[in-house]
Image 1 (spheres, one colour):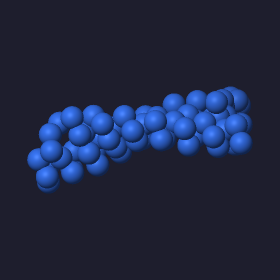
Image 2 (cartoon, rainbow, N blue to C red):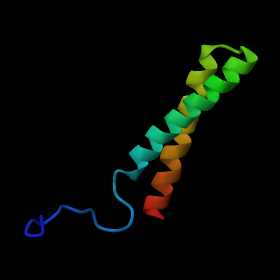
Image 3 (cartoon, rainbow, N blue to C red):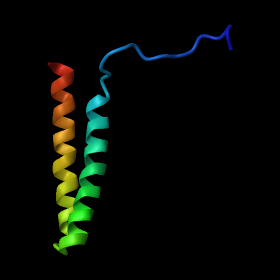
Image 4 (cartoon, rainbow, N blue to C red):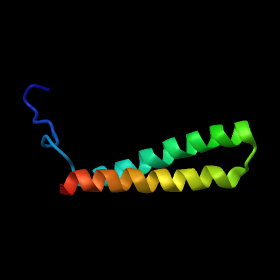
Length: 68
């Protein structure tokens, strides 16, 4: 493998970071919403709502860091 060149990403922020923020935000929001919904019994709609809000926050945060 010493003779082969490995494909590496350049250091710094990548253009797809906002999509990763969206994905991670939706996952953590869904998990947090599921825990709250399980403990309080508010309903499944709360899981979807928190996932959507957290995904939007994750996307916006990463987009702002990429452009700023």
